[in-house]
Length: 226
Image 1 (cartoon, rainbow, N blue to C red):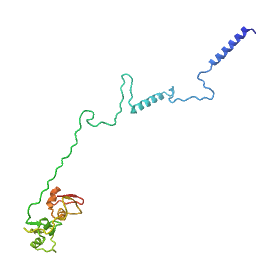
Image 2 (cartoon, rainbow, N blue to C red):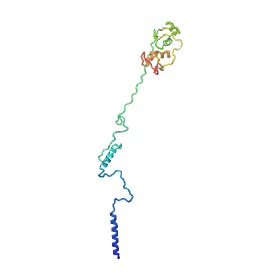
Image 3 (tube, rainbow, N blue to C red):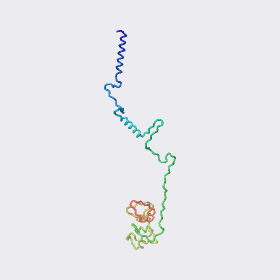
């Protein structure tokens, strides 16, 4: 066989090989390989709703996102429907906030006892002759004698005592230092509390605490004692 014939056979062999390779499917997978799955399936005639659902889900996620999205030229920036750290009224507007109102401290003027001594006094709940003698600076013996009483007498509430116009209390009239505060115990009255201090007029206690005669006190109530 001459060289020319050999060359023709070689060319024919190459052509047959090339043509056989071209007939193989470009999409055929190697043996043992599996078809890869896509996260988003491509819509086919039997699944026309898949792509619509995917688009709806994507749009819903974008609408719920708190991160503003920007568009191209002429696109607007979406803003969340709510905002954090809302500035206080007047912030950023150049308006100076009003200064807090400080209540004025007013010193309450306490009334003083009526100068001199009353001619009579009606005993209130919790009062007794010695208390009245200290309060009006009179001798307790003179007070008892003038009213026909002795040291063993216990006049009841409502008894009207005549107050001596002379004399003075022997010893110190004050029993507790004041001004101070006093916490009411049980069902005490202003008159009982005044007797504890000795020389304090119950009317002064009422006035200092904005109370009126006959006002009932409550346990734990704090009174100012002038």
